[in-house]
Image (tube, rainbow, N blue to C red; front, side):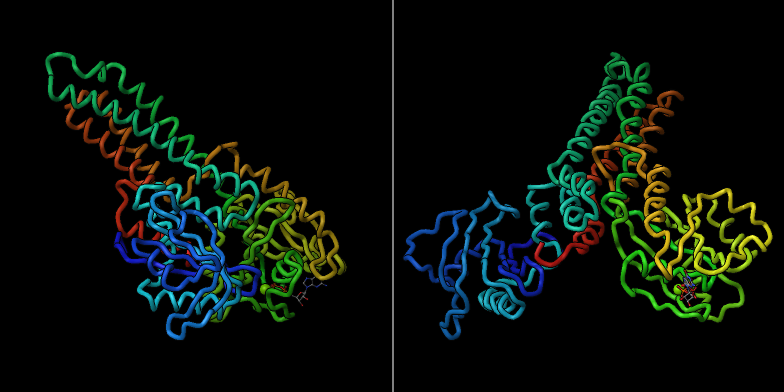
Length: 460
Ligand SMILES: Nc1nc2c(ncn2[C@@H]2O[C@H](COP(=O)(O)OP(=O)(O)OP(=O)(O)O)[C@@H](O)[C@H]2O)c(=O)[nH]1
Ligand SMILES: [Mg+2]
């Protein structure tokens, strides 16, 4: 998928009816395509870069005007991709935008792959990989705080933190290499004496703080919240009630939900990815068993769990089993069906209920819903899912690379303390540096880049 000189084109605005739509092209030669298909209202001898021109967009086959448009030609390198870029601002509507795109393709452009404009910005050195990823976070952000974190990263604040770490690691590596080249002269700059402390203080500790700040991802990605419970307790009713729409099928038949149904919403300012799941029970048929396996997988990955319990029935050993299963996770018990007579305490083991925060609701009537939302907010914030006031929100890829780097730098400390040859110390240090380089994209494998950019939307 990598660097080529093609002219790429795509619709940059969402599909649908709107006031304005934008089609854009990037690549050397895209200006000549623009000149062929655009007739400015006032004759122009030479287009000025970054200026908007009003005129007609022509279909070169028929020479008919397709739409009245605004066109801007942006000269490299002061563009998103650092290549020549053309933007055509037309009226919006899928057919019209597709027609304009078709004209560009007929004139020699090719359809851009998802994220290819941003890929070019990265390959041409305008942004590093953390900034490219933050562009995607900015587009997908699920809360205002997530937006702030993503825009900091787009501006390069996270990249700078990584660059600072890299410079420190390079300095220590240089000491090790000097010690290898001039073993007798003490050229290692006191690496044997001070190295372990410096590596811990300047590299390992700040990197661990960055790893911890990845908890801030909840503001970008949303808190992964699983609704779990026995069959028929009202899990799907709760999902529908919180979303205020009939998203999941609700019936009185136990085992209605078999798949995971996911929706996003904000509860009291907290972005939540809410998942309704198949009820947990034994003796289910094959399809339901697969649903239950999926529930367990989602439960193991969840940041937060809502365990729903039916108050109109005696507490059941299966309810207890579920509470047991989630005891390590931040959990809120949702005692449902309070509109019916209470029979919960006729069951056994009800003292377990007091170990969890509880809230009573009726998913059917909506009673207790406001309290539930406040309880969710309190439980999520109280669970310290985002215990940091970090300025960055490293994603899973950054976190793993940082973890690998910490491992190498710790190994370097160990080697120095064991008096190992400096060649071995240098090897650990350069492996750590390489892991840091993966974050910013210097040493990132092609398939990783491929998978990052393929997650982008078309036209970005
Ligand atoms: N009276 C009363 N009935 C409810 C309440 N919540 C859900 N129900 C009823 O309980 C039955 C099961 O509701 P669902 O939401 O499908 O339950 P579920 O937990 O998703 O069930 P499964 O998908 O089968 O695991 C339906 O008949 C609902 O109308 C409630 O608060 N009060
Ligand atoms: Mg259900």
